[in-house]
Image 1 (cartoon, rainbow, N blue to C red):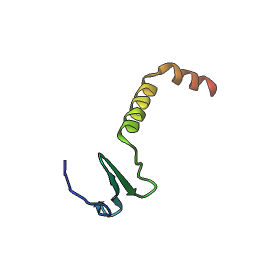
Image 2 (image 1 turned 60 degrees about the vertical axis):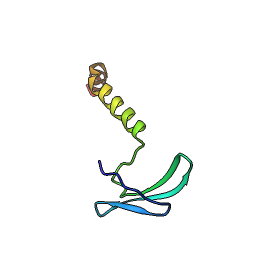
Image 3 (image 1 turned 135 degrees about the vertical axis):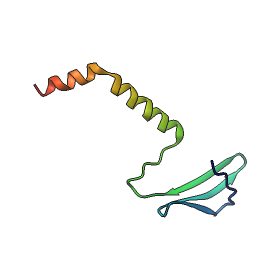
Length: 73
């Protein structure tokens, strides 16, 4: 992990097309802005983990696959 110090208004670049800017700092909270291409998904980590879990459950649900297959018969 790379740890960087940034002040309000300062930014960092990831690759050539993702820019992360510190917008505001209030106490223990930091507001950041992320500029990325539309095809790059950006999620809060807790949302990303929920999506991953839902995808995992969906792939393990064979009943849903059977129901979907029955729709096309």
